Image (cartoon, rainbow, N blue to C red):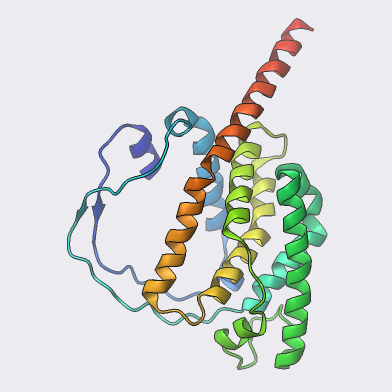
Length: 247
């Protein structure tokens, strides 16, 4: 709905309605079909409405209505080790798909990160006396304790933005089915979430929100990369289509 409003030329504003309270769920255990539906829909819309976003540069604030309300979020227990383990498992089963949908530099960096994640999670599990990171139980170990045990793990903002932009291009111009692309993104998403949990483990709400803003700025700064890759893929598709007609 939001995308259709944006590409339809409607005015956009922000309405402050207060906190939207959800039942707290561990993303490593409760990532359901909604993730695939949302991501698949966004990728499809990006491909259909490229004329509305390709030439956009920069960003600006939109009008906001209502009073700002700060509410402390509900405490959430996250199995950080399982998030990192899922990233590592993806490297074993999905590395071919990663190489096909990502730029070579991004694919190589992702595989290195996944291998590192597996090592860190395994060492942390042994140190914390956990029987395994696959089970839902954390053995009484807190999120902060698990995150402290893998404090060296970092999924860079720039790499994540590059992965998402590569996926946008692959979904529009590649030969891999959309469902397979989205499935291959899941362990990468787990790794990115795990990194944010580790990074924000000792931050208050305001500082944690700043990390979200930082990520948004990186996406904005890296947009020329997306445009360049999109234009190149578009030209390749046009040439291939012309050669096919000539043949």
